[in-house]
Amino acid sequence: MTMSPAQPAAPAPPAPGPPEPSDRKPQRGGRLRTFFRGRWLKTIPGRIRAHVVLCLAALVALLAVLSVAIGNARDSVQTIGHDAGPQVVATGTLYFALSDMDAQVSNILLIGREHDLGIGYDESLRVYEKRRAEADAAAVQAAQLAGRDPALKRTVQEVLDGLGKYERLVGQAMQLDAQSNHAPGELPDQVIDAYRQATDLMKLQLLPKAYNITLDSGAHVRQSYETKRSAVLTGRTWVAITGLIVLLLLIATQLYLARTFRRVLNPALVLATLATVVLTAVGAGLLTAHAGHIKTAKEDGFDSILQLSRARAISHSAFADESRYLLDPGRADTYEQTYLDKSLSVIYPDLGDKPINLESYYAGLEQKVAPYKPGQDDVPFLGFFGDEARTVDEGREADALAKTLQAYRTVQRNDQRMRQLASSGDRAGAIDVRMGRTSGAIRDFGAFDAALSALTAVHQDAFDEAIKDADGGLRGWNAVPPAGAAVIALLVLAGVRPRLAEFR
Image (cartoon, rainbow, N blue to C red; front, side):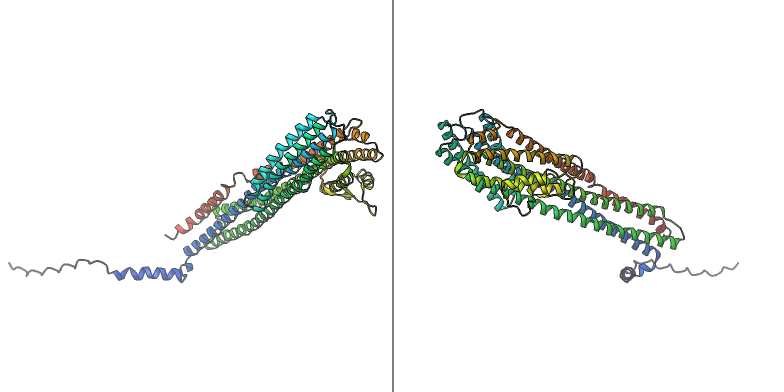
C-alpha cells in the first residue's frame, strides 16, 4: 500500500494591523470640503436641512422682535400709568395747594373779628392746614420724580424753602390781625404790609416755580410717551415683517417637500404655518391695541387731567384775588388785572375788536359761552376750557363740561356784582357779597369747583380704564412668544423628520 506524499500546510494569513491614520483624514477633510463648497445642498437631505435651518433662524428673529416690542409696551404703560404719569398729576396738586393756602389766608384776614363770616375762621384755618399738608406731600412726590435732574431737584428744594418762609410771614400777619381785632375789610396798615410780603412771595416765587415743576415733569412724560409709543409701533412693523418671512419660508419648505416627494400637504408644516400666522397676527394686533390704549390714556386722560388741574388751581387763585381786591385797596387795580388775566387763561372768549377788560369779559361770556353746547364743531372761546371743548366726547364728558361752563358763568356774575358795589363806594356790601352774607357767592364757587372736579373725574376714569386695558392685554405675554415659537419649531422638525428618515 503506497502512501501519498504529505501536502505542505498553507501559510497562515497575516494578522490585520491597525488601520493607517491616513485612511480617516482624507474622509474627514472631504466632508468639510463638501460642506464649505456647498455640495451637500445638491442632495435632497441637505436641502431639507437648509430649509429647516432658515425657518428656525427666522423664527428666532420673530421671537426676538416680538419680545423686544412687548418689553417696550410694558415700559410705556409703566411710565404713563404707574410711575411718572400719576406723579406729574400729583405735582399739579402742589400748585393748587399753594394757591388755596394763600386764598384761605386772604379770607381769614378779610373777615377780621367776624369769625362766622364766609366759611368761618376755624374752617378757613382747617382748610389752610389741609392744603399745607397736601403741598408737602406733592413736593415730596415732585422730588422723587426729579430723579437725577439737578435743575428740577433744585426747583423743588426752592419751593420747600420758600414754603417755610411763607408760613412764617403768614404767622406774623395772622398774629397782627388777631391783635388788631378789626372789622371786615378794615385792615390796619401793619397787617396789610405783613400780608403783602407773604402773598408776594407766593405769587412771584412759589407759584411760578410750582407751575414750572408741573410743566417740566409733564414734558418729560410726553417725551417718554412719544419715544415708547414710537418703539411699540416700530416693533409692530418688524413683527409683521419677520412673521411674513417665517411664513414664506414655511410655504417654500412645504412646496419643496410636495414637489420632491409628490405629496400634496405635510400636516405638521401646515399646522406650523397656521401657528405662525396666528402668532404674528395676534402679536401685531396686541401692539396696535396697546398703542391705542396708551394714546387714550395720554390724550384723553393724562393731558386733560393736567390741564383741568391747572384750571382749578388758577380759578381758586382768582377767587382769592377777590378777597385781596377788598382787603388791600392800595393794590386794588393790580389785583383786578390779575383776576382778569387768570380768568382769561381759563376762558378767553372771542371779543373781536373790543378792548379786553372785565366789563367786556363779562359780556363775552354771555355772548359766546352761554349759547355754546358741548360737541359743537365751532368753539368760540380759548383757554383751558376751550381746549377741553375742542376734544370733548358726547355723553358724560359733554354733560360735565356743560355744567362746568354754566357754573363758571355764575361765578363771574357774582364777581361783577361785587365789583360794582365796591366801585360805587359800598365796600361793606361788596364784602357781604364776596363772603356770601347776602349772596350765594361762596356756594356758587363751591358748585363750580365740584363741577370741575366731576369733569376731571371723567378723564380720570378714562385714564384708569385705558391703563387697565393696556395692562390686561399684556398679561401672560412673557410666556406666549417663547411658547408659540417652541411649538412652531417642534412642528417644523416633526414635519421634516419622516422625510429625512427615508434616506437612512
